[in-house]
Length: 269
Image 1 (cartoon, helix red, strand yellow):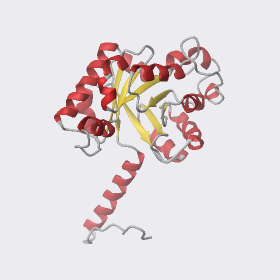
Image 2 (image 1 turned 90 degrees about the vertical axis):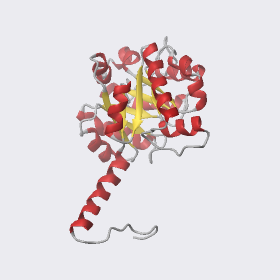
Image 3 (image 1 turned 30 degrees about the vertical axis):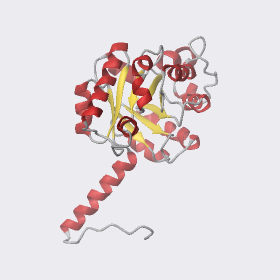
Image 4 (image 1 turned 120 degrees about the vertical axis):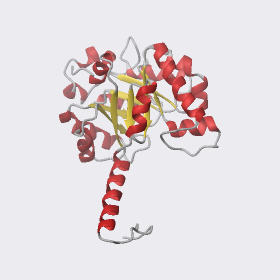
């Protein structure tokens, strides 16, 4: 089967950059996949899409050679296995709060005897190769999200879960949980308690030989995260990049033509 390029890059000591798709459209996914990311994740949890959008988005990415991934809505075996069968080479699972849940997640990612994944790679056997079943257990990446106070309290045992490939940090929810409502959600945290939590997560990953990943808003912060020891960073995403580029284009036009910058009122068309 086609090998997982992320594993190869990490084995060479190279950090990776992950793209993010929240717009349920195959053309958007195709565009994102062609921009030079090492991997692109389709967000089935918070994205404006479902499985019916996920499958064609994974298909659209194939020509680029980017590693396709998916964030599933929750720790639920059906959608995890369907995302893998659709062609995802990695799954990010939200709200993993303890070692039991982490082990449960891993079990859904692996075929027996390493797990309880059901066999039926309808699409991925064509996309990844006819021998997919023989190699999938070693090539698919299982990332558990650390984003709650409970998850941080159980960090060491989660990171030590056999078969888990990495921890993926959701900084917005993690700020909610650790600060008990004192901090607004958002990326690129500068609060001392958040920096301490991020470095603690990296240390737990390194101690257990797994990968650390962080969702970032800007490339400058992502570069700092790599210096802290993160192996993969996600920088922004399709909806934010589209909005940012459009806003910058309009603002530049207003500036060059001497107009006052304005945005349409809600409900205007």
